Length: 308
Image 1: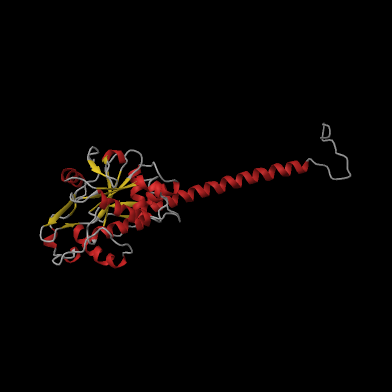
Image 2: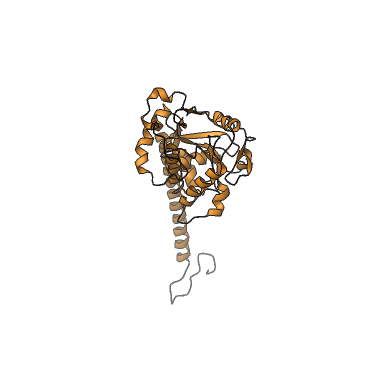
């Protein structure tokens, strides 16, 4: 089901894509658009949601500089967005990355500070040079809050390649299934991103090639387990809940009503308290005014007492 929805989304999103895919080769003459492939050809392709599954953080990959990196080195403090693509993909993977960077831009969370992004190629034939070219495109297109900080993003968004064994171990741990098509030399695969906890556990999935900035932010807030975001973010997270069947967040009316009732009680209590304080202050001022003699008259002594 997920793969079928992904294929439909890809066909509509392709026309909206604003970025180019400089590393992708031209599709061969016998290549078929996955969006138009019969459902039977997509069997064994898609996502099996393995929520709370732990990734093997000892898996090793190669980054865009050619350096060997351990998966666990990119976890520990902040949540992580994981995207599984291959850099020579003629269409779907580019749409996925375009959708991801489009969702990242308007968020109040900063990539490389509040969260990290890891893009891994599931094609063992691909090279660090291809990862570097792809990384350059998307880092230059991530302009957040009106400015671009390349230094911050260098370590905040990793583009990786790896061997067959490590790739298979990673994709299996997150439920990502794909197939290599011998005839075209290309992969048949679904599209989606994952949010992972700082400890490397699967937290949330978002499917397709267009991602809501609100849903991505909510997924990261949940994955962070309260370690990022402020009070406003906590309130938003309380009002929206994740739907595993769609990979999206929906408004929870009962929670909104509870929140509204709580705010009403707080406002009413505040109004009553303010009224009481105002009345007490008015009483003190009236008492003080009664003890002050009018101008031109001497103070009068009270019964059995001296003048104040």
